Length: 315
Image (cartoon, rainbow, N blue to C red; front, side, top):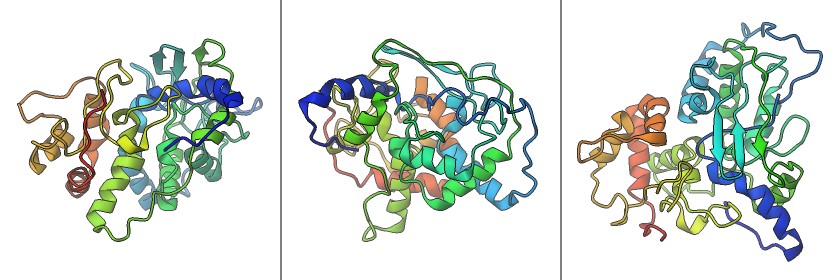
């Protein structure tokens, strides 16, 4: 994602709307009660019996690769019922309930609503989401993955838990400004054509850049919260937890000295080449995402990371 030229008249709007994106890698924070209707009955069962079992199984894999559970499950809370808070300098974002409860979750959504949220960053009512929900990466998801993810989500137990309002200071809580942010900085659509590349490399790119949305944390951002496409995966001086984010490119600042086995091992069990283990947010990524991938997909990630431009870590 790269920024477009913009006029001075829109600078204030863009700044206010863009700040939340600096925390995109930590939580998919959406609107309160997305798609809920006032007359919905909390806890009503959603009929998932017609869902194709194979689609649900495939959707579980997509769900894990995309890291949904960690963001949408609060500590000691019901699975996928939301409520996890993400503290930022601009306030606190709260992840929403994405269970199929029709009153407090997404039980009244359609598959098209999910596709629009993932690919366009829009709620069922057309309002724009904060980019704390990483639709800036999910926008390139395939039709099949969106369809399977929908089948999986609708097959999960419904949990009755109302969504919490984000606690953001003005002007950061003025959601209408997000329309300007999206117009200026959000490029929707699939990844650029890489048909000349090997299939394994293309699969790795999709897992890293789209489902895994690794660039949301591992790519530096400008003052408007926009990722720098020219420094993709080069790391960042300050990440969502306020700590430096590692460089994932094959540069001396990054993974140049790592073997393919080193990268595969950290993805599978979180162990670094020196025998230590990853911590913080990356520990969650390993537990909830990369450890659940097939060995083939982890090899694809390795192939991709070892064959992207080697970039120094931004200072």
